[in-house]
Length: 144
Picture: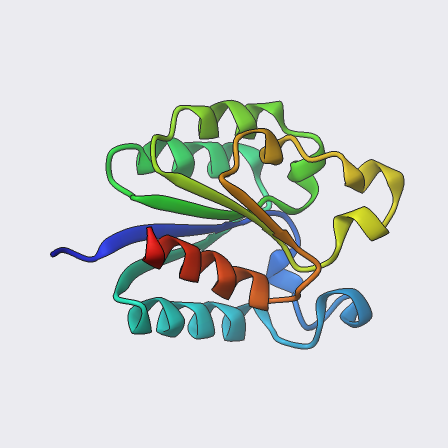
């Protein structure tokens, strides 16, 4: 049986993990998160690709390129979660599993953060559990 291929997409400012709002996002850096999740995916027999961009178009291009090549997407669209119908539309064209992850609890924050366009297409939403949310999404994919 071949390894499932998953793509972990992170949106704007996730590259600043460990440097900004540590009380919200924790102290783990982006590089540490990437290393940790790629290792975790390997332990679950998954081929994990990790990506971050501050640009909406790059995220859309990546989602489109993943069609018919990846089995699942884990996405933390960050600020684009609440604004991007374009990312939602690109995810609609993806036929694999989609899990939405947020490090913070978006429902405990500002009102504008409580609306997620990504949730409309997601197979599951995990928020407020820190980086553990990514691992839970990886676990869910490995069990499907």
